[in-house]
Image 1 (cartoon, rainbow, N blue to C red):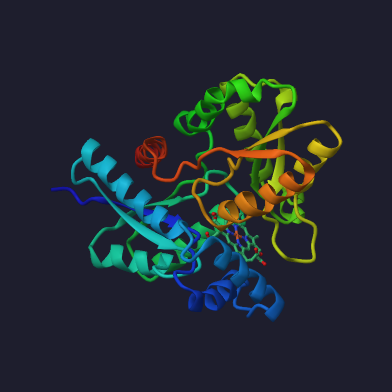
Image 2: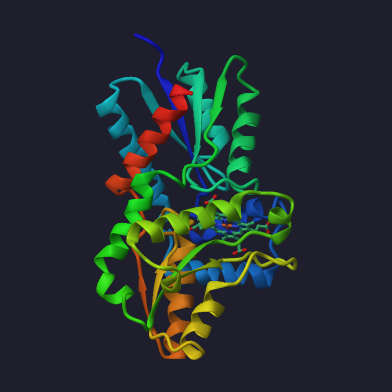
Length: 307
Ligand code: FEC
């Protein structure tokens, strides 16, 4: 039997319990312990959504769903591993396990649809560094996969189902993605263009015209430097108080799972801001481990293997 190919599914990771938060946050801050006010804020956000964030369960369900889909299409050809950036099982742990299983060909697949040096490339760099300890391993990095039809239709199908609402003149769809420090985009990173590409593709597939939707940015980090804007909370409030909108339909297309940035930043922070401005929020479901997301990931793996 030929050797299977490893699929290294890489995700952000989330603290499993309150005592994990400090180490997790320190890892995100490149080894710098968070000051108390930032730490307290983050603990408060996790407590508000309830620990653990659904991300832990969903990442594992995505791994299992992808394994099942690959087993069905190509029995015995792939073994899927989960490797996280900021908490166990770390990317390095997964690479060591792949080596222990005697597999030498690894497809690196970040669970972030748009490419950016801050997210996707960082996942790949961590994987490449771990692989250095295992001479003879071949690494096939997946760059980005936002333009897969199944993913685009996952979002547009929900908008089509809400056509009665989105066609009303007092409804606006806000597409959003994680903000990043502006300097990265000014340095030529394609992240913003890929997010614009996805929002336009979803809007086209849903039959929305340009007046019916807007792209904004969410969840900017707590750092001094400027991040990509406008922020979706400001945009939503202005749409209600200045442009006469009553309903905001939120589609966080830059993410693929329910996580802190969805359960807190959208479901609590954005919802509260919209409500205080006198409007209502409708949020689209996230792909999570839906058949559409699993089919997308399966295609991405098949394409990476064929290259
Ligand atoms: O559900 C969960 O517990 C995990 C939620 C989570 C996801 C996520 C995704 C992305 N982030 C990206 C960029 C940055 C940059 C900084 C940053 C900081 C944080 C902090 C937490 C956090 N992120 Fe995150 N991110 C998640 C959670 N993120 C917690 C620290 C507190 C805060 O600032 O809010 C700033 C780091 C720095 O200071 O250098 C930059 C990007 C993504 C989407 C791609 C991906 O998933 O990899 C980009 C989910």
